[in-house]
Image (tube, rainbow, N blue to C red; front, side, top):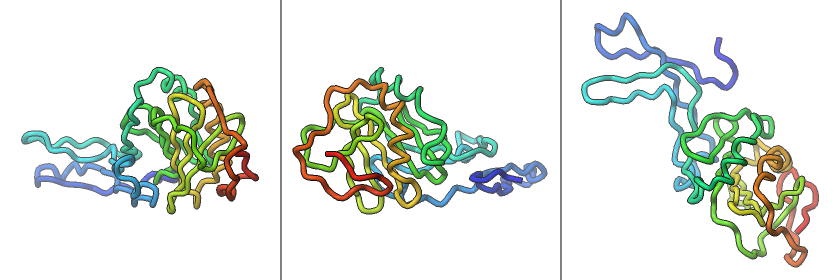
Length: 207
């Protein structure tokens, strides 16, 4: 029996000679609305069990959880990102972490409910909504079908995209605070910007 979250497998055959030893490949998961958006940042999901043709040979890996294909941020190779990445939790907002295919990125849930990239451009002064959770300041933005959180006052910056219908922003920010806190703070939210409505799952924001 497959464990929850693992896509069922289907037998795959190639030539008559190979039908006696059918291979097991996972069916690709239906993409969540989060993974369908921002193709420049979240290109697609790839399965660990994908079939690749190289020359005349057929290379097929065994069954496994799908790997999230996430585009690395411009400064993903910053050594400070590495310090934060090794401290990331195994679960965020109740979703288990899964493998990604690029440096300084992480994903939780299958399909992904939360996606993180370290090394995005550091936000400058802004009037966008800014909240503080567990000592970490975040600039928040509602992109319609998902939310984007970007650390404020820390370099390199960390970007988090999450599906607010599946993950509460308060849980996302609190669960990631310890790892993100490994990046030194050089600034923070101020009280000069007007306060907007709180993002889903948070208390009244500080700005």
